[in-house]
Amino acid sequence: MRYRAGANGGIADTFKDGTGGSAGLRPHELLEAALATCMTISARMAAADLGLDHGEVSVRVHLEREESATRFRYELALDPVEPHRPTVMERIERSPVRATLSKQLIFEPV
Image 1 (cartoon, rainbow, N blue to C red):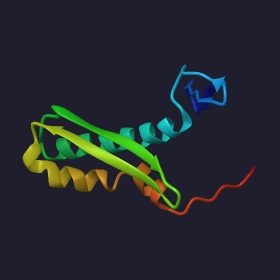
Image 2: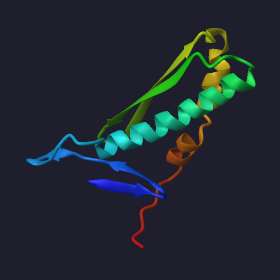
Image 3: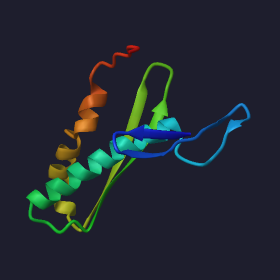
């Protein structure tokens, strides 16, 4: 399945009950990727503001769907600026996509 967001697009896919395949990210993986990408951008901006070489700066996100909640677990990979981890963590915790996902969600047909 192809999707489009503005001028950009990609392939999403899923395999369930014999339908779909593995041609692209599954829908929940797209959510993980959106949050991880935004948090990584926030982490790199924080490193730049601290005057640090980016080195290895990335965030990995895993979404866990539970009965009463959806849990996003994230891990910051930060090298060689380990002493600045608390400052960078504070910035990724304020990333725009995390702020969006933290608000009440309302779904309306158009």
